[in-house]
Image (cartoon, rainbow, N blue to C red; front, top):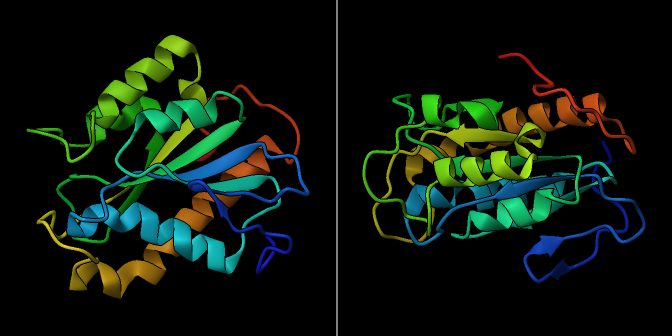
Length: 190
């Protein structure tokens, strides 16, 4: 891990890119920053940008468009998606898991604050044959009420959330390597 990442360019569109390296992976935030804790993905990606990530990883803000995840990962070896996820945990607790486990681990009762829910994204990724390259870092929200900024609970534990996501990213980078593709489904066991 480089800390901070040299050569990191300014945000281009909604992706932070390092133009001097071959990008093989991404950390992608999904969420609506106008719905309090649903903006946790964006806050985590911003924290990773400040701390630095490996040269072969780009950081992407997908906003409330989960289909952007599929678009991003098609040309990559791996992607770690960070989003608020109702998992019946304490606010701020993080669980990292393969895409195939989204339906089992995340409660999807009712409307999504995104255009479509993550189960639909996983189904599309499976049909495209790329689901094995996706992992999710779900963060239990404390609030999904309208409002800008994280709840006090998530603001307090944000450094721990970033550290947990960074740990999973490091495992993925080690597993997939800086330049090669690996077809295994799950680089880390939780």
